[in-house]
Image (cartoon, rainbow, N blue to C red; front, side, top):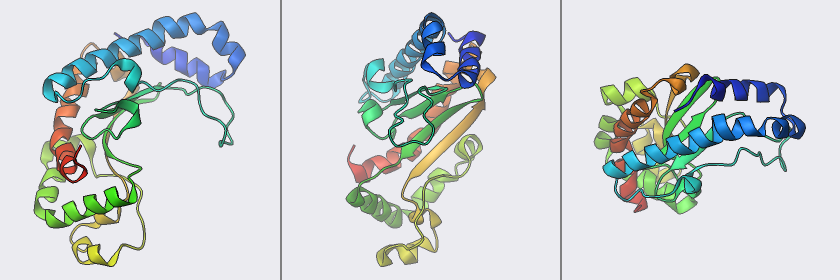
Length: 220
């Protein structure tokens, strides 16, 4: 589905991140990047739907634009140097849990699931759920296959935890997190291999116990 030209385009874009170069190479972008990525995301959505029927969206609902929002950034280069998407019930407007965040660039492929940018009450409910199910949560995140693929759970943390969670936090330090992300990184060359979609779906399957643990407190 992807060719070496997908990776090459982004390597060249990184060295020529301006509107003039992009417009001059737009046909290459359309043929080697945009269309293959849309086809790939469509395939992944279709296969995820077979596993998780509530996830049924169109690629346009999942895929982020290549144009950067530079309004609040010191880096004013206009384009991202990767393609990304969120496959979940609400697509790119929702958390990928259950679901997947997919980011395919010239240096690596990032596949992730989890929660971020939670509202205050959502975070409180998640923390209560972890506190009430410490052993079950530990079993999920320490599962050998899951741990091998994703390593430790990542996410932003706070230094001062609400008093009601401090005792449980002595057993589970992830209660200090404000986001909970299972992230796998693959070499960029995996993107152009014929079995790349199979790899992504296998990673998705590994995330399901993690995702379903969080589904209950958020009622998603």
